[in-house]
Image 1 (cartoon, rainbow, N blue to C red):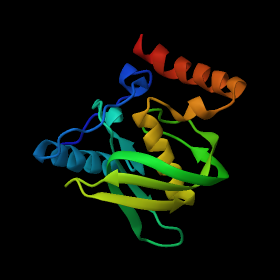
Image 2: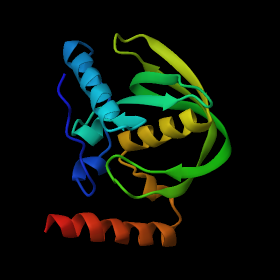
Image 3: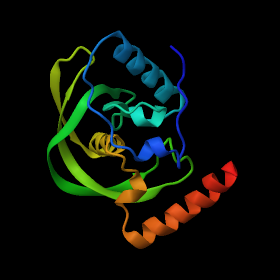
Image 4: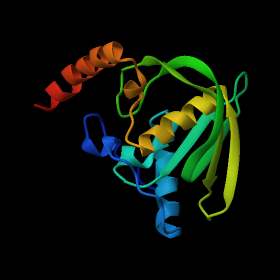
Length: 171
C-alpha cells in the first residue's frame, strides 16, 4: 500500500465538487487502504479523496476517543449529512493547508449516511470531534475548505496569509 501525495492549497482539485462513486470493487478498496495509510502517516484525523487527487466522494476518518487510547475509524463512500442540530466552535486545520488553523462554527451533532467499501449502507450519529471531522471532510467533497466557513474579513485575512506562504513558495 503506497503512501499517496496530499495536495496542498491552492491545488485546483481541492475546490472541485466530487462525483459520486458509481462502482465498488478492488480499485476502491485499494484507494481506501492507501488513504488510511496516508492519513495515519500524516498523523491526521480525516482525509478526503480530493486531497489525494481523486474526484470521488470517499473519505476516511480516524478520530481519538475522549479520555481514551481508543480511536473511532470509518471509511465512508458517498456520505451525506441527513440531519444535524446544535452548534460548536472549535479550532480546525487541514492536511492540505498545513500550519494554518481557525476557529470554525459547525453543527454539534450530525447524522450521516454512507456506504462501506462493500456497498452496505450504514449510519453514524456523531457529536463533538467526530461530528466536526465528518463535516470538514464532507466539505472537501463539495470543494469547500475550512477557511470558506469563516466570516469574510477573517477569511480574507487568512487566505492572504496562506497565499503568501504557499503561492509565493511555488513561484
